[in-house]
Length: 111
Length: 113
Image (cartoon, chains in turn orange, green):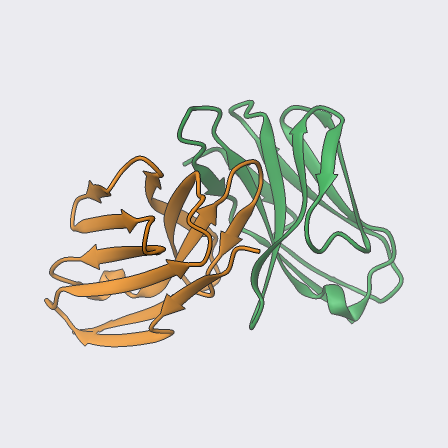
């Protein structure tokens, strides 16, 4: 059974800092991996999706990497801003409808 | 914006009453999902649909039923609501492209007293 772990559970950084969020998974037979952000009381917003054949994806200040062999993905946020404060979740798709979510990392960027 | 609308957004009901949540999409995607999100449990799949009248169970389907009579609408029904079904319910769609990207609605907060 796929298990997805996100570390740290919470992170507080000063504005402008570069940071890395981690997502690890136990079964490397994945179809893709997707990163989301969730603001309080809101739905999940898709940030980046990495296919199993890809190593990384970039969107603006965000860069997500995937290393299937080690069961890890990272989300790198450059030059963090207070508006980046949210909960970040990763979801691993094992094919079909076997999408497993991590518990999320709560990020606070202090101004 | 993936064109997903959930209704109602907030509902308070009493134990034993039936409740139906609606998810409406504007882009005719084949796959639709219902999740619930609870502190300490994260997001868990309740039911999903892969076409009109084609549905299947997720990991926490007990106490829930679904129906999809039109491509654009996916209904989640609690036949007799219980306090353990107090949660935030999210509908999601998966794009039909090769990426299979998932997009979520804004959520429906249900409180069962």
